[in-house]
Image (cartoon, rainbow, N blue to C red; front, side, top):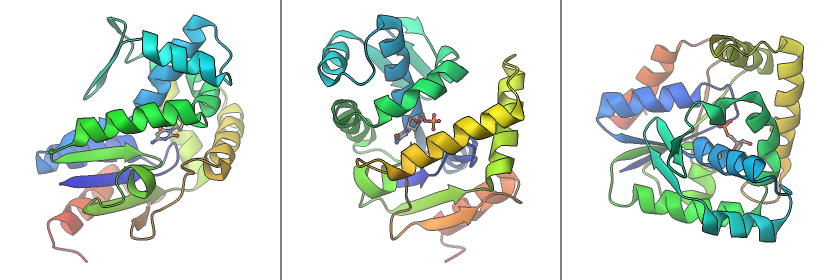
Length: 216
Ligand code: DC
């Protein structure tokens, strides 16, 4: 069974998706981490992030391994490095790249095939798994999302102002929702949950109740 959880950065979807997977005994796929891994690889290789041929060559060359909570790039654990702010900032051209989206779409479908899995990202319910059994789309007030990201970065020792985070987030939201390929939007059959005033536990309980048939 496939459950998709999509939404913008800071909507709580990563934490929620992990917890839902744990509660249901499902596996978990963080597709944002896959885009981040390609972004980091491209930054390290020093290639033009808009050059589709260079991106295609890069994808043929690098070895990326994805397991829950861990990303390994050419043998190195980059699970922390992919969360850095420069990777977030550079991820939009990678997310807009047809070459990268095609490559990662195939890997996402392979990783999920035949499994009970919670797949989290932007396009899981719309493009990658249009026939998923359950689809959720999380939203939250932009200021609350920026505060959550600020807390997360502080915990990682990165001190970036709330204003700066809010500005980057607005730009990224706009690019994510307006891009031609796999834009950020709820699937017509997704249940939209506003997490602004909900705790993580409340969102998780709501999703688990729906999947277990206690809520419509
Ligand atoms: O969720 P995140 O911040 O880790 O995502 C990183 C980048 O990847 C961000 O620019 C959105 C993009 N992304 C995407 O386009 N499609 C997905 N399914 C997941 C992430």
